Length: 192
Ligand SMILES: Cc1cc2nc3c(=O)[nH]c(=O)nc-3n(C[C@H](O)[C@H](O)[C@H](O)COP(=O)(O)O)c2cc1C
Image 1 (cartoon, rainbow, N blue to C red):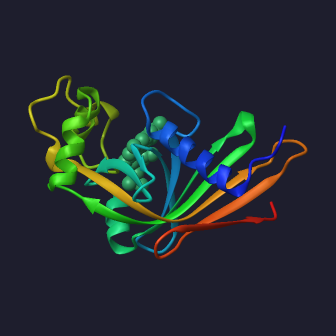
Image 2: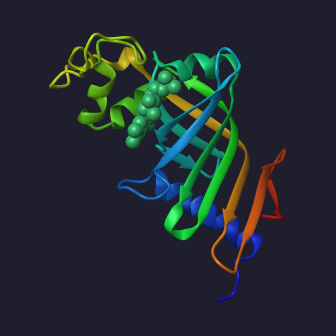
């Protein structure tokens, strides 16, 4: 089978990102998001990819405004994310800069597009990470109550600066990087 050119690979990467952000579960849905903690130590956690816009070079995540990652990204907007498709030996890593949207038009549009079972997550009584005497105390309510929760809802927009694709399929190891330039993306092969 002929190998993809760099240009074809760039297309493929955006296709995978779009799949990950689309409905249903794909190997590119759940990412690990790394931030610089407030004390400088690295922090990492799982997040769902909610949007991937090739035209703007942006990814979209949703989170609780009260969560630690929001404070971390407000202090240091640079972040890294990684996802892997283990059965197919593939990994995508990205580097970018986060902008937090809460209570604005971006957050409103995302909130309106969310499904009710997702909205409930933002109505939990305690901020994520708060010490609680038992798990029961921190459960979300049984039903969505109007716009309650919107105050805790945030969109993280990630302006991508670097995308890296690694494929370590047996016999065909390939690693490529794509960088955002002033007006377009450039890319190249690197040793895996
Ligand atoms: C399968 C899965 C999906 C998750 N998706 C998200 C998500 O989309 N956004 C989010 O903020 N947290 C998500 N979480 C929870 C985070 O991993 C994390 O525990 C939480 O956001 C608190 O992180 P922080 O204290 O570092 O901010 C998810 C967790 C799991 C296990």
